[in-house]
Structures are given as structure tokens and as C-alpha cells.
Figure 1 (cartoon, rainbow, N blue to C red):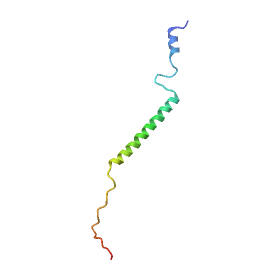
Figure 2 (figure 1 turned 90 degrees about the vertical axis):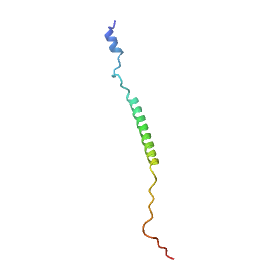
Figure 3 (figure 1 turned 45 degrees about the vertical axis):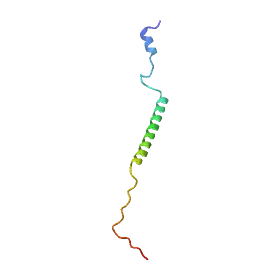
Figure 4 (figure 1 turned 180 degrees about the vertical axis):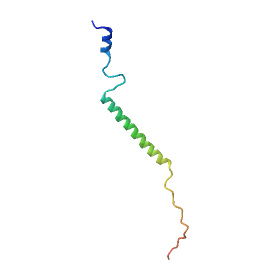
Length: 68
């Protein structure tokens, strides 16, 4: 018969608590990269929308002469 202590050892996972498979971690990493890329793109898009367009140049102080 197996002792209580041995049963507990057998019931435990080989990996420490909180660990995930390599494949699962790769999926999480890919998802995080995707979300961060979308967030960066949206932030760039929104920051350009908030800024005014290029400043128009003021008319120069020199008078314009027309050749007839």
C-alpha cells in the first residue's frame, strides 16, 4: 500500500505551480505583441489627429510686383 506522503508526491505536477507549456507561452507572447502593436498604431493615429495641420506661411513683408 502507498503511504499518504507518497500519494501526495505522485499527485503533484512535475512543473512548479504557475508554469505553462512552451506552446501556451508562445501563444500568449504572440497575443501580447499583437495587442501592443495595435495599441501603438492607434496611439500614433490619434496623436496625429489631435495635432493641427502644417502651419501656413504668412505673407512675406516684401510687396509682390507684377510684370505687365
